[in-house]
Amino acid sequence: MSTTLPPLALYVHFPWCVRKCPYCDFNSYTLKEALPEERYVEALLSDLSRQAADLADRPLVSVFLGGGTPSLFSPEAIARVLEAAQRAFAGAAAPEVTLEANPGTIERGRFAEYRAAGINRVSLGAQSFDARRLETLGRIHSPQETRRAAEELHAAGLGNFNLDLMYALPGQDAAGALSDVEEAVALAPAHLSHYQLTLEPGTPFAATPPPGLPDDDAGADMLAACQERIAAAGFAQYEVSGYARPDRECRHNLNYWGFGDYVGIGAGAHGKLSFAAGGALQITRTVRPREPRRYLADTQAAGRVPIAAADLAFEFMLNALRLTGGFRQSLFAARTGMEWDQIALTVSALSAQGLLSRSGEIWRTTPLGLRFLNEVLLRFLPAGPVRSGRLYAQGVGAHSGNERITRNIA
Image (cartoon, rainbow, N blue to C red; front, side, top):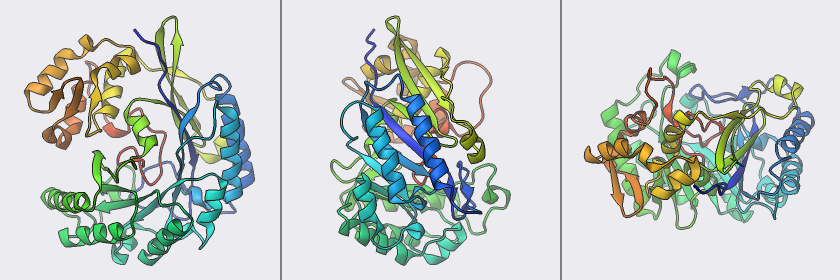
């Protein structure tokens, strides 16, 4: 059994927003007083130093700065974090360094400063280009601010950017969803994240659903029409909700979906780390305190908790089956330390039902399997009571920014 360690990425969480959106259930907090930028950056640097102590010989394949709203932090603060990451790990700077940004928190011209700080990719939370829909979603930006932000990205040499779009919004029809896609394509992004609005437990929208939500059939029709238009614009779907121009797939995403490793620093950040131990893989999770004040008071290293062997097949499939291109059968053993025989019967049964397909060494979900991905994933859960919770978020919850695990991180 090979014990080659998987690629390593870094996720940095910035937990504050100007206002928390009513559909958002991620680890973010409304900024009610002055941003504690200096204290928080110092905590991040301490967290990073401690967690990277025994990982320094492993290079980073990507860095993702998510939130919350990382663009509330100055380019100087971002530069300090990136410089520390470069010192902490082997090799040069990561080839992909993404900053999540809300169009309403970017001043004209600042993208050039973020680029100078080390950012080479941006994920912009557009969500919609309909002012009424944005108001319903609780967004603080206008459609025109998104257009201006995209112009500034191009002017700053940051053409490798993602636009986050939602569909099946309150009062939206297929024409409205298509209009959003048309507006997004016109801004010439390199990547699109396109996902359906869902009412997540614990959010204001779940407690009081907004009127006019499209039904499931209407949502499916919107998705089909939008996917056709996105493909016609030259974007290929490479995972459940991610679409990219050639060679512009998000490397950070791909590392997640390939069950790669990642260090998670910041309030509420999770991590997944693999170690070679006695000729076998030991796969662990880390988690940091969720609430910013608790995190600022706790700069000790995140405890590492081994993932139970019974959960590894589920966790691998939770990630790998999102990819439309599928995964090599050999990757399962390489990333989990398990033998394929341990899941062969489950895979064969799903294949017989038309939910999975095989082409040579590649396994992937069929269009039917992708449509019913949660049901496919449940088949890999260990025997016992069915666990509740959002399947897509299980085990990969390092992110809580605009491009989420439940959608697409990109």
